[in-house]
Length: 327
Image (tube, rainbow, N blue to C red):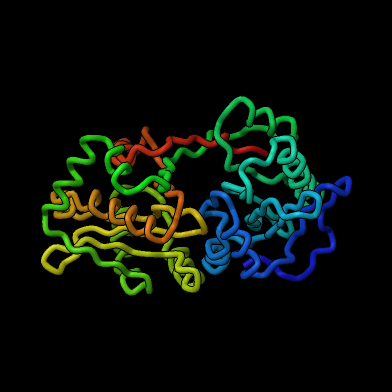
């Protein structure tokens, strides 16, 4: 978890802009998350705490203030690089309390963040902001002193504000038909919020990563997320059962007004029965009941995982590609 003692080098500029670093404990971090417009999973307090437990990174936490009013926050990952030198990364942040904050105000904070890490460590922060890839956003980052070094992450955001019936009507016709098939296949839904099925799902997840030769969330990270997210119910596992046996499962995270489809497993029987269509739609129903507004479908990659991308696209959400990585 990020440090909570007062940091003597809190950043301030012109009396209007200030970043308070490492002065807020978990509960205060969580309150800011809950007040945010559309928070992302990598910027959730329980996720940051799990990174530390898993040994993946330490974290620093900054509250962004304009006219002394909090307007956003950011978690910064710190990883040892060489002796006393560390590398720093911001992934899918900062998170803004209000999405209407002008770009000129955001630029001031970007400049302050860049200066903090450049001057303290001699190594610039690697910055993957939660901003769509537009010419205007690229200009904002260039004016702030950042240089683009990587393509942006792509995902699909599903707006859960409409009622369930219009949401279903908006599904791709083929996806909706397969959902109907799944609902006629006598699948039973099992909902796990206490982590009793987590080890079972992690084993299937690890087998799938080994078979497909890709890297996904580690066992240590998922276990840490369950541990630190119990109070806020960060993790819910939905399983589809046939004859009492699980044939597919998905792990959904809830973080403020948003949720993320984070891990999934589908066995041969699950694929035959369209179990993932069933589970994703049950997740939509559950999140709506819990007043979650935004559902991040967890990333798409048309080059290496085209079938998964097509499946997620069938929910007819908003395709978003972020502006990329900067240093």
